[in-house]
Length: 79
Image (cartoon, rainbow, N blue to C red; front, side, top):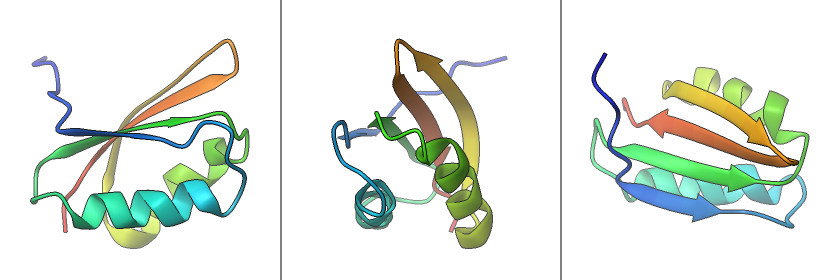
């Protein structure tokens, strides 16, 4: 499988709901279709919020990882 190339990175570390989702929405709008946004977050709520947001907005969650309380999401803009 080909590795995804991240187009932009959004660091929401230290921010709580709803800011990670609000900022993700703004960041994804700035990308072209097919580009990939990496989201870095420390809010545990993003584990539920980011996948739900992707489903609601028609974006694709490519990966979700956690290391030492820091979450990394790769989201492809599909719409």
